[in-house]
Image 1 (cartoon, one colour):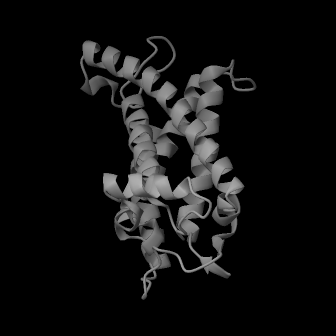
Image 2: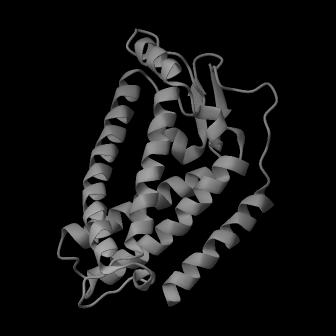
Length: 224
């Protein structure tokens, strides 16, 4: 049994910040929003932060540490099917990072969240709030985006529910995914199938540089 460092600080920061912002976004739209006087304004600002956060994750998926990179966990449909069959067995295959099915879910959720964040930048309630990019789209386009924004929020609920169910399933299989996303380290019963012989360590300076880069559009949206 080995204890392996899998998730770097940027990935963990992204994950838990994402949880907080999604929770705040749903709260300000699905409830009365108390104690906020204008919950839609808080919802919008959460969306601005979410946009920057997602931009960082897309870049980190290309430039970051090994297990954060999309290339390390995106697999062919055949590989995903084969993994699903093995997962149903008594001893599922061991992966340090995202397994083939989990990797697909990560990308689907990122795409859905990105659409939600970007589409929200064009919306208006015609009373209290108008998003920064609303003037760039026609009225019909804004209405279409508003409809898709609402439908996609339901899709996100389904994706989050599926994610939580997957966590429970893996916990029953003896894999503690939540703890690994807190500490960054994962306890493995054997050698994982996705651990490279020579790991590429991502620079902390690179991560900080990307944070600054992604913060710039957030600052502009915040002040617009």
